[in-house]
Length: 339
Image (cartoon, rainbow, N blue to C red; front, side):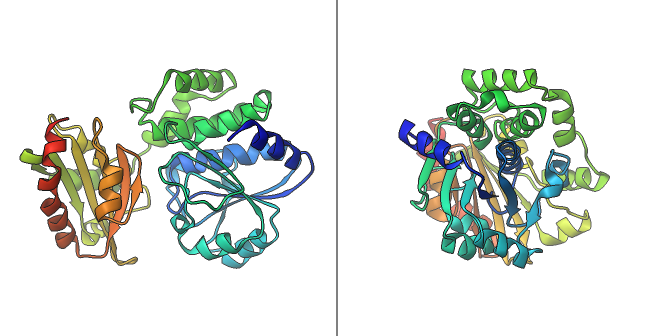
């Protein structure tokens, strides 16, 4: 995003606008944190702002300031469609292709609103009037901080905005341990804490509130852990029956794939989760070093993401999806064993 774009956006936001902010389907901490952080910032500018999410999200994110204002497209479709139709500006955050919003795709693609994309994933689609795309960024929340700074409004960041942005940076960096965490990221985090973000409370709210069933499900997942040493790979499976047994709720499998990646000598980790309602196997891939799970997911599992973290899906059965994963590993063995 160049200086001319910023000047144009500042001019655009100089008068009251009807603004809609949308994240991707199955929103995570970065998606919710960035949308609500931007939401609070734009409210300070006197705008009429709505946050619309494609579907529900984990309960450990529902304490974030502004959560009660969020509308869900899957259960409030007509209201959301009307709001999109009447919007002057549409911000799309933490995704770069409309299909990533599921059933919202048609409404968003047909919207006459001016579109602004802010995202850090690879290979963005060309649908926005203004695009701020940077794959080197740790998170979309970090990009929202820079966006506010570029607009000359960093002084408008208060405790509420700081809390929202801290959540997304923390979750998308794996609590600041991923390679995308830079010295700039830490300086931003320091400023957010200075503005009132309570790092201990935020961490506890996201990571340290578990139900008995969620921990039991984690135990089941670890029991299902398999290792393929010649490929330096490990994978976990969870069937729909297993999810049902432990009263699965959205978000209960968040971060489970990282246990597989934490094994000594493992470079590639995957988790395969059966979703009979959608008729798919949901796939999360993680890697170390320069091995790109983004490329693997795009090539084989209808997905994508980042070099070290990507998602995908399969319409095969759970066992056949695992068989497919195992069958493609030999073609990646050289790259995996070089890490």
